[in-house]
Length: 599
Image (cartoon, rainbow, N blue to C red):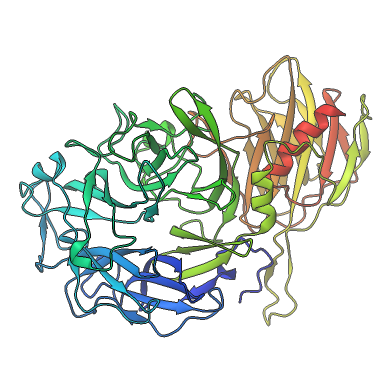
């Protein structure tokens, strides 16, 4: 285990064995009490020959794993992107791609070719009747109905392209106790590898109870010739669909696009027809959720709440950048909760503000393809960076904060260094000592840097009559400029300046978040775990809107001491001020917003 004092750091997760390449570590809980994990692996990189599917068991919640078992052999045709489905009697099915015909290359829509052949061929399954210890020697093909995108590929549908990352769903009526499998059909290979894609659902009304694999029935949904696509006017990419069921038996599906936001749709008839695809919003008709071309998954908890995994950046500002790669920036991972709200056509989902769930110190390290395990009141997630898969226990305080975010109105007291709540405030007060972010590590032979994962938070209520630049609202900087300051920028925003003896870092609120002539509650969170600074204004986490790709920013991990001088100067426009010697969570900042409004 890592010694990094932050459970969100991915190195604190427990590794899942692989052969080198590690993808889609998905887990089901077996009837004998074990966790059964399936993984796509190989000794090369993603898409190289030898890629195949293995499984392994754990009886201690991922602390250790038994010897891997080959669901498909490394020497056979490429087998990839497996998901698990547990039937009523405990049988476990493994569904995956299989290059049964041993295709060696595929034609691109621009006339070129790809040598990568892991996202095509036959959709197949094997099964295990001994909780994943062994698998059937035979595999069965799943019949998949042809869509227009299949017929329109460069092979006229004779060769089909697809893959699968979404967790299968066992849902009640109107799905009728059936199992729903998710398939991502590819209509063209080309730019970005998958140049055109859409979602399909494979429904089986008897797989959960039928013991004879030859008698299992499959139906391809939705009805018609077109799958779940991007919203009208969006791009050609709509893939990695994630499915859940609501309390009124409606189906909700969310999936990635290249439009800077995920798409979603609802079905009120078990998946036969769907609402017009739309971009995911925090609440019906509200602002868009931002997300790149990466897996974004929705999970229903046993208590009826929902959790949503995504990356919290994107939008039109990202797409306008000439160097933008929609596959990049899967670090950190953010988590939101969702709850059901009534609408004219049935229940819909409404989302909370997000929290950071996982991160790596290297911003270019990407983590994705998670699964969620709920056991004995504890939550665990798996993830992979394509080289190491891991299991992480989700900190209870993160989930509790998200689930209670809609009602919380308590002011946080843990780590409170300064509380000034009776206006008018003094023009200056003694500056509290902020935590140091780094220190000399005397346990190292070279006495190098120890990153302490510290943080601080500024929480203030204010009213600005205008947003003219260079107004100084808070300032602890000494004669050398070291310390912190909150100022108005030339963009009509509030900008946090943080400076130590080595460096200076700046980040600001989204344009329009703070309005002239209006009261505002502003929380600036400086989190030394992932080295991220974020703003929560009037209970809303800044996400960059249409102005920029990111609403949150990174600062140097080598920051040292930013307390500054002995005095903190406060402008008259500040009506209350709290300073914390730690990074508040988003949910705590929202609780402060409501709690401060009541005092």
